[in-house]
Figure (cartoon, rainbow, N blue to C red):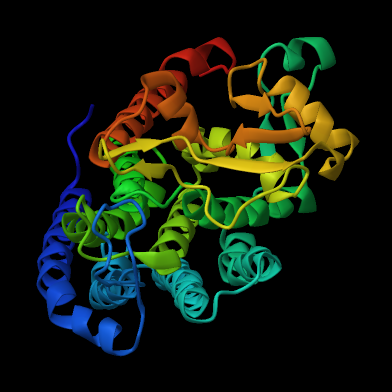
Length: 406
């Protein structure tokens, strides 16, 4: 790999330094501000603890989001001027990219905190991320506007087509990416450290991917990613310190939406949306598995997280019980297929009452590994997340040559 230029090395140092500073500020402020959440009645009980008569501050992810935004505001001059190319149009492009990213992330932090306070309906959680993604989509249209995709082997040989223009469908895809990322982490939650932990693993994967591409022709886009992902890792590590078992704070929907939109921005404006999706393999699996309950093909309880077995202090698979007559044809099909795949456990009583384990990846892990402690379950998930990132890197940097020309 060729030697990095001074502008790229300087940008890398600024981004890492900002990440360290953001960690220290967040680590200091969370305990200082936690009482404000308690006094505002933004608190909840930890359902998976034997002694849960104490209140835990909830929605603390807004602290991380606010510090993240402040840190990015402070490094705007460094990013805009990081290139030796001082052409005004280049600096204006850099500024528009950065500000649109800040605007979209800020909108999702606001939505997340609003959800923590008002408990929004699911339809709002689908519509509002779409609206929040408009700034980055418009900036993408103005600065890049590329809607072509390179066709993989063997399509060019069969159809004599190397690239295909998706047109407006490409923007639909990017909008759907923003909606998916912001909700995927929120769906995979409820256990101490899971929300922050999975976000940190994904962010570190993005960091490694960006560093590996600093010497490529598209180094500028990856430098943009570094400026955004390093402070995110910093604030997320600080939150994880307090959210790890036994959790002293709850991150709330604020952090989940904040993290999701940050990843969506990185994937879209950093030009590696397909690689970003590969980093979300566990979240994609969890979403597909959850579809029957999310769309009410199968009854869905308010909380689907694993439940505590008090006498042994371990988590067991949570269940939902319903009548067979409550199911439609699609619901019956789901319950025919999923148990055969080992993705849920189903029992039928004499009075035709059906009991199934909730359709989440956490329950699947418990089904495979057995009942386990809450902290151990989180570690299992993070190891799975890291392994999937390893698979993503294998596909991106090795197997990709089987389907695309250099």
